[in-house]
Each structure stands twice: as C-alpha cells, then as structure tokens.
Length: 110
Length: 116
Image (tube, rainbow over all chains, first blue to last red; front, side, top):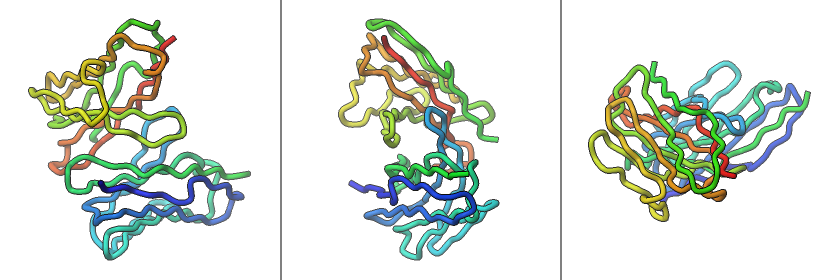
C-alpha cells in the first residue's frame, strides 16, 4: 500500500531561521496537501499541489511538488513562534481516500 | 466557504455508555464524509468512509459494531461510539468532500473523547 514518509519527525529552530520539511511517497501522487495542526485541534489547510513541478507560496510558507509527483517540500522562511505546530502532508493516491504522513513537530524558540 | 463543524468539541463519559459525535458541512453538500482517529503524537488514521444514504465502508481493523456511522443527509454524518471503554479515548476528526466537485476534503475541528 502507498505510504507517505515525512522528515524530520521533529524540528526545533531559533526564531528567524529557515526550515524545510519533506514528504516522500512510494507512488505517484494525484494531489498533495499540506496541513498544520496544533495538538488536540483540527487541521488547518495550508496548500494543495497537483501538477508536477508546481510551487505555491502563502506568506512565509512555500510548498513544492517535484516533477515525478512523488516528493514535496514545505519551506518556512524566517520562522516565527506562530509557525509552531504539527505539519502533516496528506495525499490523494487516486482512490478518493487520503493518506497522511507521520507528521513533523515544529518548535520555534523565541 | 467549505466549512465543516463537529459537535461536541470534547466529551467525557463513563465506561459502558455510548457517545454520538456530529459532523456537519455548513455551506456545501457533502457527498462523502470521512471519519479519522488520531492518537497522541500520531498521524490521522482513517476509520471509515460514508456516502449519503448508504452504509459506511470501514477500514480494516475498525469494528463497525463499535463505531456506528450514519450519513443521513448531505450535510450531516454521525459517529456513535457504542459501549465506550477507556481505550476508545482519542481525538476524532471528520472531513467532508463534494464542495468543489473534486476529491478535496475539508476537515472539522475534531472531537476529543475521554472515557473514564
């Protein structure tokens, strides 16, 4: 079955630093979603990528999907404490059901 | 647009009782709703998929008699945890699709269930 692997599992950075989170799939993705979650709360939609080579940005967050549509990265520029949380990648493998990555826990030290 | 609500946001119940969690699509008709469970420090695990007017499809390992799902209308799905036990304590999240005509899912804020 298809799986999504995220790396790193956890990340602690100093405020102002840049960081990157990766999401890798064993098979081609039909849609790749990035979400942010605070523990015990719902998912906040960040971005959706569908085309190979696609890149989207919102405020200080940029997400990219590689040409083969098997790997995505989420990059945060000049991180702030408000960026702290759990980042999840989710994907539609073409079966209308989502699969989710294992999550990356981000802490930003002020 | 595409807002999904859940009620209640948290619930505490005694072991052996049943608990119902509602998931509503507020501004669109959800042809399909999904129920997920999330354990602490873990990712979301899909429990079941429900389509309006038909029986839910459960993922392998999920007890359908324990987790009853009803999708009675295009805006409401309910998850009932029957005879709840402490091991059922978890964070339950629903999602709904059908807003944009594609498979994109919109997530509810989640319900934290604690069984004493």
